[in-house]
Amino acid sequence: MTVTDETGATITVESIERIIPLDGDIAEIVFALDLGANVVATDLSATYPPEADALPEIGYQRALSAEAVAAFAPTVLLATDIAGPPEALDDMRRLGFPLVIVPNETTSTGAGQKIRAVAEALGVPQRGESLASAVDGAIAEAAAPPGGEGRPRVIALYLRGTAAQLVLGESSNTRWLIEAAGGIDVSESMGITDPVPISAEAILAAAPEVVLVPEAGLTSVGGIDGLLDIGGLAETPAGRNRHVLFYDDQLLLGNGPRTAEVLARLRDDLRRVPTTPEGES
Image (cartoon, rainbow, N blue to C red):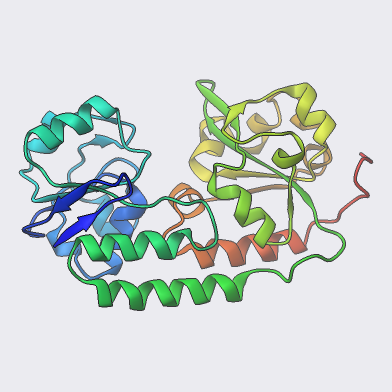
């Protein structure tokens, strides 16, 4: 297959015998396309399905090395714009490995676009269209009706112990999920696009009623009690009522084939949260 990837580059994929997805949600897509037997290694973010998690690892998608990848002699590499550093990707290209960058839109249609692009690069476009159409339909079915009163205010955080404590914004998958599930993402009123460090003052002003966090991040700070020790959170409505929602990292952040599953769970969980008029605490 010869494809034009997300960067505008033209890449020829001569064999899919040895696939390395450089991203967890791409690995999940490859397995969902029934090509998992061709995957020879994955990155650390590939935790689902279990067969992907069990494969040898080539490092983390944001901190890759060409040497680690080359050791597995891949015939095709698949990545999103998250993969890096750029120097490592350039080294992979110089070594002659076909590297296809696929779309990574954080929207309700992003999962379908990503699936179609992966399937095209691997020479199974019809299989990809079938899977993408099913995922698109399931997402539409899982979404809460637009508008309505009593929409809880939600803040989404990315945590890795004390090393990274960030508020997620428009560029993250959580923004559209919160809105589609019937919530209000307070990062919009906070003016946050890309992830930014947590500010106690800004969080108190936003007065979220729910904290949404990836499960591994919650574990890294010692669970809900540790989370509420982070600046400002304990004094918010979410903190006082311990309204903390957490889901598997790849499921929540990946925008892959199971996106409708996390959307439906978030929708149902938000419906159980009592809300207060905006501005009250």
